[in-house]
Amino acid sequence: MGGGGGYVTAAGGRGGGRYPPLSALVVCAIAAFSAVIVLAVLHSAYDAAVSRTRTLLGHNLEPTPWHVFPHAVGRPPARAALRCAPSVACLPPISRPPKPKPNSSSSGSGPRECPAYFAAIHRDLAPWRRRAAGKRGGVTRAVVEAARRRASMRVTVSGGGRRLHVDLYYACVQSRALFTVWGLLQLMRRYPGRVPDVDLMFDCMDRPAVNRTEQQDSTPPPPPLFRYCTTRDHFDIPFPDWSFWGWTETNIEPWDRQFASIKAGAKATNKWQDRVPTAYWRGNPDVASPLRMALLGCNDTNLWRAEIMRQNWDEEAKSGYTHSKLSTQCTHRYKIYAEGFAWSVSLKYILSCGSMALLIDPQYQDFFSRGLEPKVNYWPVSAAGMCESIKDAVDWGNANPAEAEQVGARGQRLMEDLRMDAVYDYMLHLLTEYAKLMDYRPAPPPTAQVACEGSLLCLADEKQRRFLEESVAEPAVDEPCVLPPPPPE
Ligand SMILES: *[C@@H]1O[C@H](CO)[C@@H](O)[C@H](O)[C@H]1NC(C)=O
Ligand SMILES: *[C@@H]1O[C@H](CO)[C@@H](O)[C@H](O)[C@H]1NC(C)=O
Ligand SMILES: *[C@@H]1O[C@H](CO)[C@@H](O)[C@H](O)[C@H]1NC(C)=O
Image (tube, rainbow, N blue to C red; front, side, top):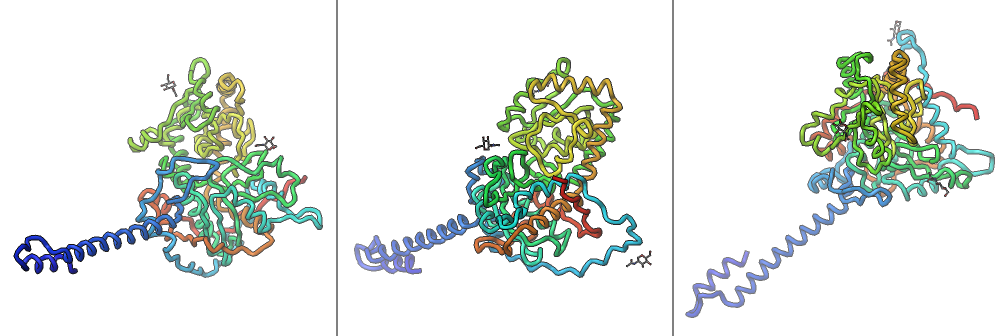
């Protein structure tokens, strides 16, 4: 207000008055200075709000100390973070009318058995099953808190399976957290009111952390930690990974859609007999994987019957993913699977081709890879003497084409049976069994944010939003498949 006016009146004043008098200058300076202060205060309030804003895209969260990664990629603009989280109001869930009872006479088929590998849920949760009377077991608040040390987020389902809260501790690489939480919301949509109330710790990074040997006979039981994979030597609990709902950074679509397109592509490309009679791998060797580096050395179709191609995701993104389309990669009779930094999401795409899959000594397991059987639905290749082992497998297959084709077909069948229906059934059974072991009533911690479809879509960029919307689940009309009993000890 005062600055300009003061100057004009002052200038029209006394004789020497070409310059504003000191008092006017002071007023002027104070005004300008307070404007700066107001701006600075606004700015720091904005900064503070942004730095308090923890979103599923990792804005302002540090990468996990146990698996650091370049941070800029996938961070939302601060504006989006402020707009969407944590303040976005998630509406209370719409209570749906109860489903009509399935008409047993019309559906006819009766209860369906889940695939046999669902039985691994019992083994995964065995450390928390109450054992001998008097010995404390189970999922206690204390063991869940103990898992926090290695978790990137805590997920709480409450309100009879209708509310989802996420407490974020660290950023996840790329859009893993966004798509994983979306997957949980879709489970709640598929089975309204049937997802049990649970409180669980989740790590979204690659490698398992709960060492089986160290925790074997410990009282209390080991910290229960969910992640995308485990090994025989770990107690980490495997859970379907984000790519089932889509992996935008590599242009991989939601799983049902991706499977259908690979299968159609495989059919259109070639009958198995007409495919190139060598082994093929295409991927990123630069993921701190000695196995993949060694695989580069087998790139010789005459000597080792193998073709190893390098995938550069940055270049692919620039060229619109024209060379990385999975549906055009079923050209060979044999497809190689090599683990990366840990398990690799590529396994399901490789098996989908119907080519015989050559798996190089897998160390990691995800939830469905426990359904793999050597020489039944894949062919084992040893990491020691890898190139010779690949050559032996290819030579065997070309000498026994009918059998090799069958191995490929059974691998594809395993993936056919792993449609999203089965993925949701697995999640439901796993959470239900886990909930049975909990000895306290789950409630979200005060720092947790409620997550709903609206808040996630608000955070997503255009491409993420497209994938999220494409992977919306339909409420189930059938009962979930029946979980096989625990295998006899
Ligand atoms: C169930 O099936 C029977 C026999 O097909 C039919 O008469 C009946 O209307 C069906 N009920 C519902 C709820 O669809
Ligand atoms: C688990 O811990 C034992 C004992 O500390 C160690 O020898 C082993 O290498 C660890 N296993 C893994 C998979 O890290
Ligand atoms: C493997 O060999 C082929 C044919 O010689 C070549 O085009 C390709 O670039 C090689 N792959 C790698 C990763 O060097």
